[in-house]
Length: 256
Ligand SMILES: *Cc1c(COP(=O)(O)O)cnc(C)c1O
Image (cartoon, rainbow, N blue to C red; front, side, top):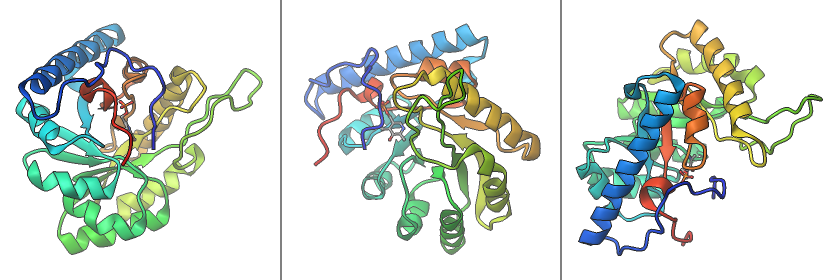
């Protein structure tokens, strides 16, 4: 799934060969530029930079890149497919692994085994599957509810194409299920900005959903929002976790 807008920000072309000294230098430069972007966005929003955690989304990139990012001090890594998660996570056990993709219930056990945070909880059946898996694996999994965001024009009509998740009106009920489930911990919300709309409107809406959630569940303060093309808008609207792929790793190779 290509979830990014076409704007690639200051990402490089990813031209250096993987596993080489040049590639390590490229990753270091990208990371430095991303940290400057996050810092500038935090300053603009009047927020301390420590409030924002950078999650490197390493999908489609090789384990050598994952190791290089970890060596550069990136502690949070993410994947959007179970197969890639289980292939990479054991090679980098010191990292906190995040699962950010659509999740089928039959993959819940594997994801729970390898990831500490699941950003894409969007339905009751998945809550049940994750809870069962967490109990079986004797782990506690932090769950973020993926919220479906459309932007609304002045006439109230949706202007963007929503990217999946639970409708805002259904968040309280799903949150209560997660909060009551064994082995799960309610962490907050996640969203992907809608296609073809201003991400600022969407992230403002997400912030409102997140505030309501936190008033009922004080421990659920995470807002996972912002990717390479829209991290500034997300940080402006309170993102605590930005999920960055291309800005760090360059243009993704085509899915094989
Ligand atoms: C791929 C992906 C990202 C990273 O997107 P970039 O535009 O490469 O920064 C973030 N979130 C999710 C859910 C993704 O699948």
